[in-house]
Amino acid sequence: MKMLGNSSRGLFPIQKCLLYRTCILPIPFYGFQLWFFKSAPIVKNITELKKMQQRAVLWITGIFQTSPSEGIKAITGLIPITLHLCKLNGRYYLCYASIPSLHTINSLLDSQYAKNQIPYKTATSNLTTK
Image (cartoon, rainbow, N blue to C red):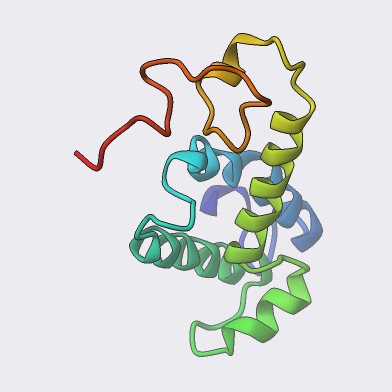
């Protein structure tokens, strides 16, 4: 990404932001449903994602590292990582809600999402902590 532009020439900041949102963000968020839920310790993953976003924001704007991070994110138009994960998580719950009741995946979901279908032996509600 550094070869595509720096502060004096190359891509414009709006193009850099679009590149980050469309090409870079889907990579670390792939499979986030496996570790982003209420009972999982996700602090380490979120801090790594925040560091990644901070480096990207500095690249997009071309400013110094000592600048306040929240203000820079507001200037670039990027939402915080935790809110982005919550948005994606809500979208996945909507996808699960739109699955027909006789679909096979319903037997693998927890009982609260399974739409009155008998849970399969490897359903998430039957898994132990090991």
